[in-house]
Length: 111
Length: 120
Picture 1 (cartoon, rainbow over the protein chains, first blue to last red):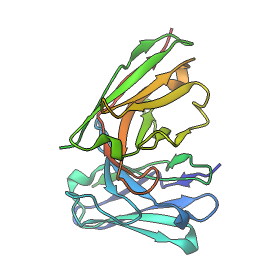
Picture 2 (picture 1 turned 30 degrees about the horizontal axis):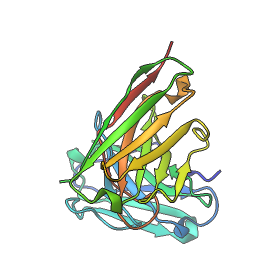
Picture 3 (picture 1 turned 120 degrees about the horizontal axis):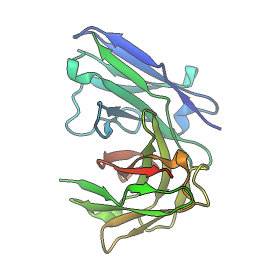
Picture 4 (picture 1 turned 90 degrees about the vertical axis):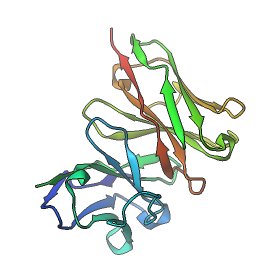
């Protein structure tokens, strides 16, 4: 089964930059779009990146997404880190049998 | 403003059934694929099922295939999830989510969720 693996947690100081990786277990992660979702404690998820690198309206340009085919991974980068960015982040795509797949999730802590 | 409002959650015994609903507003419901995603207490997100705009394409996670049925009523702007033979491991918050109108399972909007608890 296709899986997406993320680091369990990352932490950084306000104003710095963090990058969260999302590594595919097989196939090419570039074959299907990757999305990123933010989930603050006690709240529903929201979309911060869709179709690999697109930002929904209202999402600040501090959030960016990319694909690295050589490492079969996607990345979410948050620059100019703010305390409000403290949340869980999940990557998501789907596999060759059209089953949706979410990453394992990463907790971002703003020190 | 796009709104997705789930309902129908609650406490049910193992082996029981429950039907979740999602009322959509603020967009042309019949133009978008829809999804159900769940989250067990303290766990990560899990994709459950997706349905295309005209119900032509339907997909299920292996964990619910044969027990859950996704459907939609475009005239009523509503999405449904019929859940049968419920198990303790189906306990979760269930989110209704709308696609962006482009690629498969590209979630753009989320509802607030409804809690389903399966326990005797």
